[in-house]
Length: 113
Image (cartoon, rainbow, N blue to C red; front, side):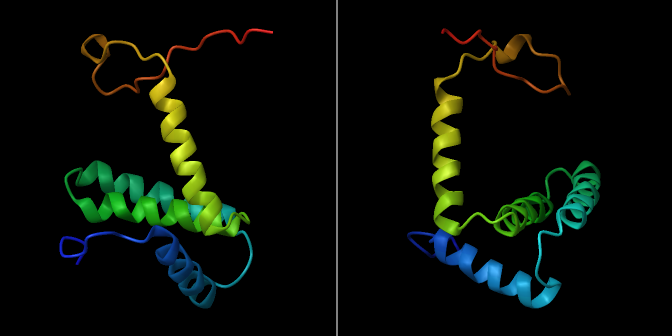
C-alpha cells in the first residue's frame, strides 16, 4: 500500500493506532506488557532477521508504548526528527573497526560547562 502512496502521514497513522490500541488492549500505560511483547518480537527478529513485518512489530509496539506514556502523535514525530538530528551531529567510530554483532555507539564526549 505505501508503495503507491506519495506521502505517508505518520501523525494520522499514530492517531489511528492509538484508537485501535485503546479499543483492543484497554487504557493505561501497560508499560510492562508492551516491553514483554517487544522482547518476544526481538526473539522473532533473531529467528527471521530479513522479515520486515517482524521489524515493524517492534516499531508499532514502540509507538504504542510512547502513546501510552502520554506522548501525543505530534510530540512523537518531533522526537523522531530531533533524535535523528542529534545522532547525525554525534561523532561515531569507524564502522569498519566495529566488532560484528555488537552495537556501534557514538563516542561520548564530556559536556563543556
